[in-house]
Image (cartoon, rainbow, N blue to C red; front, top):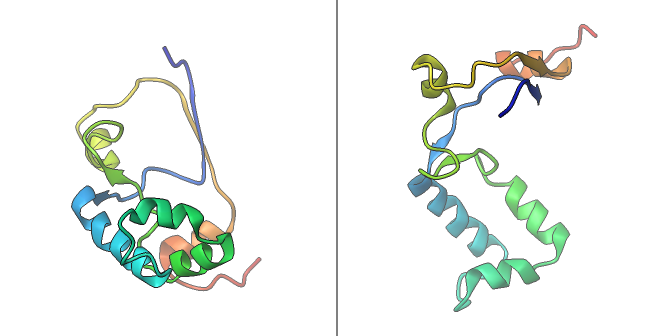
Length: 110
C-alpha cells in the first residue's frame, strides 16, 4: 500500500484515447521510412536514435499518455473528479518554466 505520493512536473495532464495514438504511430513510421516494412515496430527499433528523435519531435501530441483500459483506465482528471484516487499525502513539484507553458505565453520575468 502506498503511504505518500510524490510527482515531479505538476498535476494530472490531459490524456488521449488509444485510437488517436494510431495515427501518430503511422505518421512516425512513415517519417522514418518504415511504412513499407512487414514489421514496423521492429523497423522502428532499428532506426538510428537521432532520426527517430527528430521525427518524433515533429509530431504533435506524441508524448502524451493514452487511456489503454489496463494501466491507465480513465482520464486522470475523471479519476480525481470522481474520487477514484488514493487517499494519501501528495507532493507535486515543478520548475519555473511550467508557469509559461500552462499559460501559453513566454515568461521572461525570471
